[in-house]
Image 1: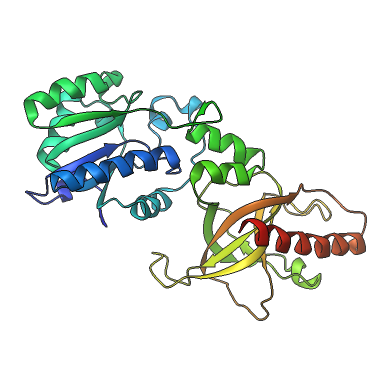
Image 2 (image 1 turned 180 degrees about the vertical axis):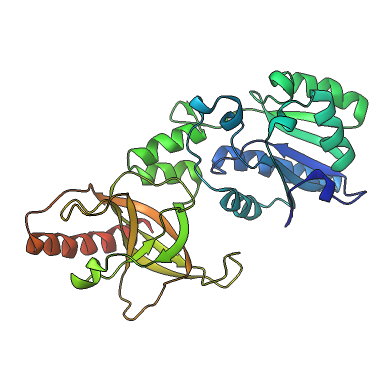
Amino acid sequence: MIVFRDPAEIPAGFGPSVVAIGKFDGVHSGHRAVIDRARVTATDAGARVVAVTFDRNPLSLLRPELCPEALVSVDQKIALLRDAGVDAVLVLRFDEALAALAPETFAERILVDALGAVCVMVGADFRFGRGGAGTPEFLVEFGRGHGFTVDIVGDVQGGGRRVSSTWVRELLAAGQVEDAARLLGRPHAVRAEVVHGLKRGRELGYPTANLATDAEGFIPADGVYAGWLVDEGTDAGGYAPATRYAAAISIGTNPTFDDVPVRQVEAYVLDETGLDLYGHIVQVQFVARVRGMVAFEGIDKLIAQMDADVTDVRAALRSGG
């Protein structure tokens, strides 16, 4: 898959392209339905599938007080779009200059001149250009004179509700990672470098891989989860062969000891001894929530609960992993 960070990087004659435009936050099942449709159209047209997205939520510039936390980082989004089957991704820097473009200028420079679009796919609520003046209906009319058609894709529904990044975010914030995975079509994951911590888990017999506090991806509610740790090695680009381990995952501030100032994501890898992950980039994938985070009266009770947690994690991974 090709990644462009600026339209100027796209070589002349790159098209024809079938272009799907959107924030693609989380690349959930609704997004993938659009991409699947684009792939079918591209096969018929002998074209490439290109996802056009942004380096941040436009609301972060336009209405920062309304901007939600992203489900995934830009790098995670690119990897997910690759896995969904797109041929190229154009990541546009959403700044004041882009926000100020007239819809006609945006469509001509990016869709026509840079990508050679033959079909453009957008959601019914898609808006672009200065003041949000660009609408799907505008694109339909513009496309008639510039050689492309427009496919306005309807929402994917689930449980009587539109599948959306907002819904996924709500579920993760409540710790409902299994329900979130159903909307995403995969377990939700956070990604970060493994760093040194207080090493308290090692003292308790459960050494953990502590993720750096700048982890990519939305961190679910505090608690203990069953999941997987995927070791990408020391290659920050994520291109090295990855190894997956079953893991018990803890999120929180270690209330029993009350000496961790910020929320910490840490993973205890099951059935592995001597595993050195320091400096490695890892993904932590959440399969099921085992329990909430609570403080225990004494080390013995904490260790007994950790023993029970590992048993519950094994059972959860057998049934849902």
